[in-house]
Length: 146
Image (tube, rainbow, N blue to C red; front, side):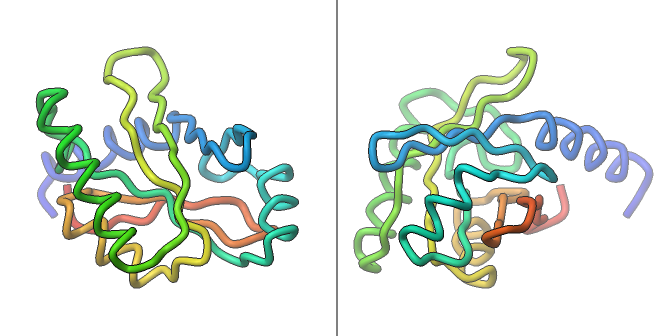
């Protein structure tokens, strides 16, 4: 990876790590950050017998800002794919720090394995996704080079 690619990846990584990932499930909002324990979410996952999860978006592929209309269509396609697979999913929102980038509608998919999550994120042109296991801090997973 060249130095400009390394610089871009570092900038993106910083942005992803500073983002708050908000999950709306069963009338509750859970705020998650990469690398930080999510005690309330872990409790909810245990109550529902889920062991792992993925936070995936379809908006702004490869960190290229698209129009609101195009992003809504991409998000709808992601939701349609999950519904066709018969997956449980919950609405979510990626809220970047500092307001320099718009919040992005996303999905929280409990019970999704890491390989399937990566495959779907790559299908929608995403650089990365957030993956978690119950009782472990969520982590950032790169899907492709930025």
